[in-house]
Amino acid sequence: MKQISGKAYAKINLYLDVRGLRADGYHELETVFQTVELCDLVAASLHRQGGISLRCSLPYLPTDGRNLAVKAAELFFRETGLENPGLNLNIKKNIPVGAGLAGGSTDAACVLRLLNRMFGMPLSGERLAAAALTLGADVPFCLRGGTALAGGVGEKLRPLPPLPECAVVLVKPGFSVSTKAAFALYDQTGGSRPGKSAPLLAALTRGDLKGVCRELHNGLEGPVAGQFPVIGQLKERLAELGAEGALMTGSGSAVYGIFSRREAAVQAAEALRGQLRFVTVTRPLAGL
Image (cartoon, rainbow, N blue to C red; front, side):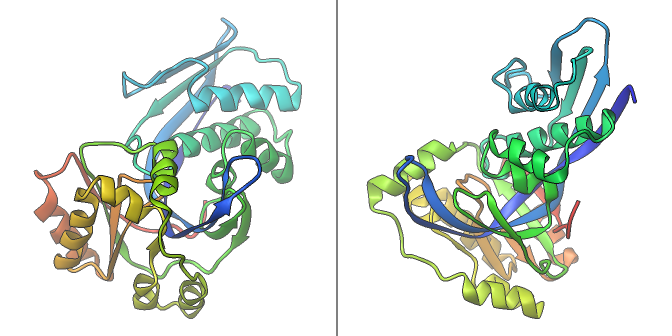
């Protein structure tokens, strides 16, 4: 197989609670990941020049070894022991950067999936997931997608019943928030009120969309929104436009609203376009 392509899907967090600081300096998390249809387009092809080259539709993103997609390709060849015959990667970015949507992680996961298929599946699912974890805590989830409860730094995964059918309006203000900055704000402010995941998990099990929306929680949202009040304002605006629930995803800066009817979501998105740099309507995916 000399050429292959695929979709790298974004994620949102339906729930995120910071459980404390670990001995290794990372924060212990409990979170519920949900894949959504918004995606980057990733292609891989072989060439004869050797090495790994990357082209990306966003000119300001690095295309060398600093890019997580390139790191994923390098990791694949190390893990398999296969010789790199020369690889071109091409990424069409649709997921906004610095938004808490796992844009870099999902590109890396997609590269691992594509190369594993291109070279005849030399890595089992377990080995692929273990390799993915070395790239980032949410890369293993991005490999499998769907709905999952995650613990540790985000790598301990348990599949959950899918989010009931709905539409999701995703918005991003004109600034980004790095994961490091979000956790620094959390530590500086003393954190936020702890959440309880059990009611949200029970609502997912019942297939109760309104119940899920009542229990949306992100422990990073308070500290980040304290620094960037527009995040709280966007949540309020989405609620005014009919969202059953709204939340900042991950470390921000993107905010989403969940709508029971797609028509209402489309109308809300139209009301927000022109005011924000990024607005889209998407939907949850049950798996990859």
